[in-house]
Structures are given as structure tokens and as C-alpha cells.
Picture: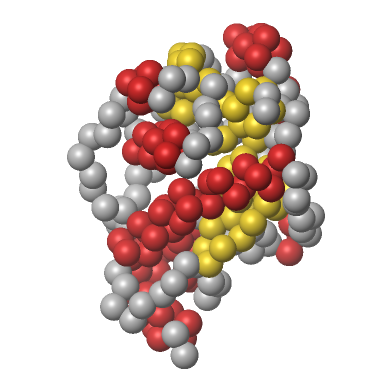
Length: 232
């Protein structure tokens, strides 16, 4: 196998930590970590919390050292990362933390870059996937896909729904959507290597923007009825 690269953030970040440790635990060698500094986004913070508060995870540079990979503090776009990709000639990229990647970065990976989206693509694309799924009565699940220049698009590797329980809270569902991404990691890499992908019609699904506070509160209040319908 050629080089495997994980895209990450250059600050303590739970998904970066968990993806690196999970890959290591599954016997998948990560060769390089491309870690980008924090970027201020023009997206208002959520008014309704949907995720559990966690203690600060390990810094990704420490995790990278512990699994024997090389750590590169590098922006995820621009000449620096393009030169690095040309030098490494990577096979597969895995997104554990990244902003929108440009075509020149994507095209530098012979088997593509894998992303895990906490919604079923193409039905649920964009931000607040959990809330939009509930609001639009769509099953909750995760999509692994090879990214392209569009947002939450590209060739589909796998789509998996999560189990539901009548006493689920919004925090349960959010956490389960996260955990299934870890479960899907090895299979997504195997499918990418074997070019086991599916083309879908992205015209059939809309891109969802960030919900405002009123919509967030209204949607969370819809959860009991949503679970009741889905569990029939």
C-alpha cells in the first residue's frame, strides 16, 4: 500500500484522536497526519446543544507520535500541502478534521479522500445533519464517501443507519452517529482501495444550511414523535 494520510486539526480534537487510535487498533498503518491550525468560521454557534461535553482530548501531535506516523503542521490548501502531496504520493486520505478541500489536494490521492458525513447522502447534505434528518423525517445514518469539489458529495462507499430506542435523547443519537463512523473506518478504506463505489443523483437531495436557534429548539422538540414513527 502507498502512503495513508489523515487530515486533522492542529489542536486537541476528539475525532482526530479517536480516528488515529482506532486505525492503529485495527492494524491500519497511518503514515502521515496533515494537521491544520484553527480557522475562524463565519458560522454562528448553535443555541441548542446536541453533543456531549467531553474532557480535553490528547493533542494530535502526541497521538501521531505514539502510533509511529509523521506529523505535518500544514494548511489544508496552498503550495505547502501540494508540495507535500507530490513528495509523498499518497494512496488514501481520511478526514478526521478538515475544512473544504480544493481539487488540487483531492486529485493528489490515487484512491481518493474518505469523508464520513453524519447523514444519509444525498438526502441530507450540509450542516446540522442530525437535526435536518429529524425535521424532514429521514432515517438517521452515516455516509462514507470519496469527496470531490462539491460539499458532501462524490462517490458513495457505504451508508449505514443507526439503531433507535424509544428513550433516546438527542445526545444518544449524536453519539451513536459518531461511533458508527469509527466502526465504518476499516471497511471504507477497503472499499476505496477496491473502487467499490456507487454513483448517486445529487439533484435528489438539497444542501442544508445551519439552523437558527428557533428551528433547533423546534426540531429537538419533534424527537419523541420522530422516534415513535420510526419505531413502528
